[in-house]
Length: 206
Image (cartoon, rainbow, N blue to C red; front, top):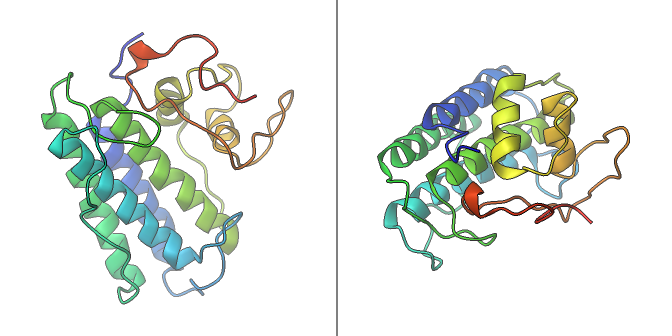
């Protein structure tokens, strides 16, 4: 199975999806909690920027030890400014992934990730938290199945192959239900290390 399932352009695409989806809601009440989280919608959007920026930094320095983050939460920025930063952060992560050799590794609590892992995790942070915000605002949100399937194959190789990839991705990240499977809940996990290092049954929800 290829380690390059999720590509740098997928990160840019995820950022575009977030911006296109949430821009019409910029004048809504962003202090309400995002669905399933103790965070406000605004903090959740800020978290997207912070997480994706951190991934770019972790991969760029190519150390498997934790490093100081490039950006901390900023309570002063407007929703428009945060959405612009989503575009910047996703572009930076995409470019860092594109420049990284296959043997490059960066720190992640789940295990040292290669560039395809960081690309997939960046996509997941963007899309899943966009979904959390959409639920709070009652905005219908679906993600193209091809992108979801690539993310699933890279980060959740144990996930079901049959079914709606977006619903499977929500289930795999502790959101929603999947017929025939138990709910995972908040203790979900992904496979951040290179896909070649995954073995059958590893990281699978108990």
